[in-house]
Length: 291
Length: 274
Image (cartoon, rainbow over all chains, first blue to last red):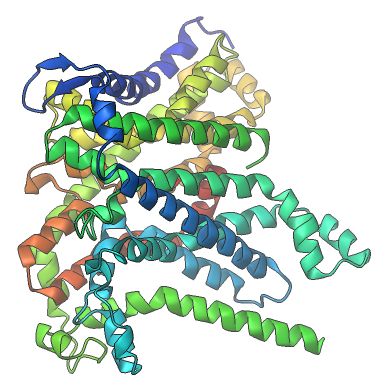
């Protein structure tokens, strides 16, 4: 095709500018901000060196946040990725029956609801007096098991984690189902002729051939765990006390409630380092195979 | 064969049990959204004496319609921006053998690794500085920018596979590169446009972090933040609130049930959560 040398770049320019201006520059600016003390209401910036980082790492809630984010991460890996994959295997197995697609779609539905709607819905489910959970326990004669749920500082974070498992396990299941469907049937049949049972086929043929998708699922789950924000914001807002505080919410509260943008920026850099490393692994993995 | 049948039954019992876990909170919410508040307080597990569809009407009239309209405007503009800019970018990257296109692609793709939270504080300042804070553009611009990397990633792999011969024939017919894009590339790529659109829509429609920070006035709020405000406005009117949550959630679910094929393809081509 006869085109001027600049033509392709003209097509690329608007999109690139958008990404540069609204993604790259803010992220770089955030790294700079983390060394300053600054406010939303004025343009003044005061260089404070590593002070924001010192305050961040020595903050009372630092270890609470790390514990909560890591808890969320580990439980999500077990339930969403682990159990979700097992369900996907069952849905794709010969014993699934003819409603497999119906079940697959049902399990995916919660992932379509906004995080705020799910959060609000579960605040009613967990509500101590009229909520679904305590009402059901009472109806089953298990009044002794009723709890304050989100109002209990020991339970709150687990309630939020449980809610997320409800919402996203079906999403991972769906991703894994499609990966399993891409495994060539010949391989599975050949293994069956060689006498491999269904469990053996799953472990030795299907899972290894879908391992890239499995890795992608693992990584998006881990990244999601460290970006956690809306789920906590819409249910407990970090409470009771600071018991369900997480990194993302801490950033938000420092920036827009305490007007401590420097501290928020330092928190952002911390999240950035974690998610960046994991995203690079994800890109590597998803580019190496046909994910 | 009987062993297989037993297994099928057992596995399906498990499937039904899991489906119940998914449906139970939603069904409970649906039932209670049709009750009066007194009925809800008396027993949240009971069915309503007379279904109160008025709750849904109230939820809609008490502000939800406004948030809905805002979400439509924001999602529509964002979607158009994302698709146009990403497809042009992917076109420039793939169909010209342009020098440096691999580097540009990697830089754009790198944007996928940067999370919204890390950009939050500076974006807030930038949006204020360019005087778009608390306007529709305050969320539309970041939504477009943050979805471009992912969408380019999907479109690029699709465009690369389009045979060169089609373009060569068009060049003979005297088409310029923009006409080739409009009349050949875009029509052929409809499936990937649909997949990208649907995945981006799901993301934009439900986005909370940016909308919560960059939109201040009630007149502009999208559904996810609108719902939070709604809760504050309604206070003890639980049943109307529940109706609001349902109305807010329906569009994406209905869309999924109608277009699950495009959904699945878009989701699996580039798995990104949240």
